[in-house]
Image 1 (tube, rainbow, N blue to C red):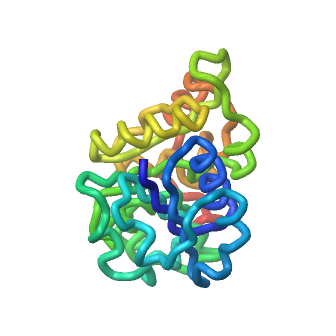
Image 2: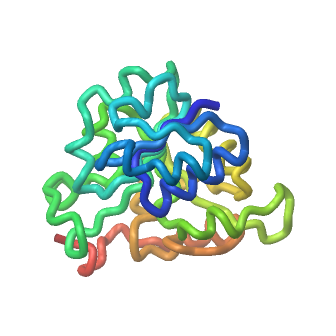
Length: 220
């Protein structure tokens, strides 16, 4: 599968490592230019490209940048992607710690991923936002392994969600359907499922326990 990864931080870098090891054709980009990704490209065999090139022909695009950086992504970012491309959003809103106040989230009540979706002009699937980056390398297990770690996945496009869930299964994790993008507050920072290392049953229970009220530490 052809996969574009936009953002080469902890999550983006480790997804590049795992996805290339599984034989996927991966392009990776960051905000500083492909020359800064030489070491990652040499390590993994991924192509280091500019952000506007990462989605070219891609069947899956992973957007894994700070939320405050989303409006600065190149316009038409997904215009060259494959038809039916599944776009994974890993983002979290950290207004006090990093992103500043975002009016669409604070005043309109949008979930992080709905806000991101509006900027990208394309539906997204929310996944990996509460996953420890090192777990992507250290915790994969074969399907059917008792207690296999599960990740929540939210999205409105059922076909795209299926692509993402199948890819996560290939990476070595179970998935739990966390509903649509308007339900994705259930997996935002400081909810019970955020950072949870557990199997599918525990993840479902944690999603059910979530409160829609954003904690004070995560309000701008």
